[in-house]
Length: 317
Image (cartoon, rainbow, N blue to C red; front, top):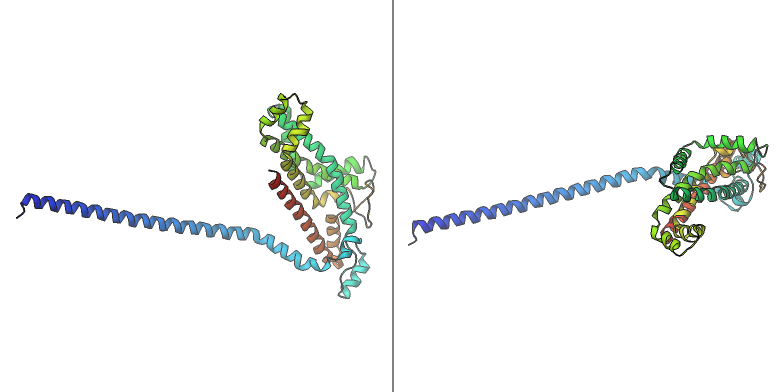
């Protein structure tokens, strides 16, 4: 027979083991409950993000759908290669249930003309200023220019159009012109290219610049042959995004280019642009269909430039 002392030890050992087993089981249950709760919180958070993201992009999707539904019927060969029709032609076509004749050739050529001239003005100046800011980061003059650049980025476009009107329309061409519109667009392009150039230069390893200097390469060649090619993707992305920004501007062009019913390649003469034509079509109830098709064209053009900028950034990064 077992002694009372041995029985007590066995009972105590059994109690301890049972207690430990129960604690382990409780810990496993608690851990499982916590895991289930974390999983539920994760699913709830994911669902919330999906709903909010859907609400965010739904207006864009609705706009694209509306443009496609109402704008595609006017897209044809004449839309790209003929000038806008007059009111009588549009009214006759609408009354007969036909497609409005003509297109936006004068707007397309005017937009391309002004964007090219604006790019010729803005890109070299912006690159030089951006490189200057990069090379003189701690100096007061560079800080002043950086602050003015930020201020310029927030100035309303109509104010820039008024400045171009005073400088070019009244002072140079003595009338509305594509040059005045180009200057207004160039001023708008400056801040974005300047800041993107400075930030791109900061991302280039300083050792690349030091290696060129160690080899005795002149400073201007280091910039032109080493720094700019190394930051090509960032520079090109900033340039294309700045062009995308000014493509849809209407207010500064209303004060500078006035518009034209014919195709014009003379920069000192009034010219049209796609945003200007959209505004003109909107004010004519017979040309509402051309508003949708012109807006669809402009959206597709801007989207294409943004996709190109993204591809360049991915390819050369």
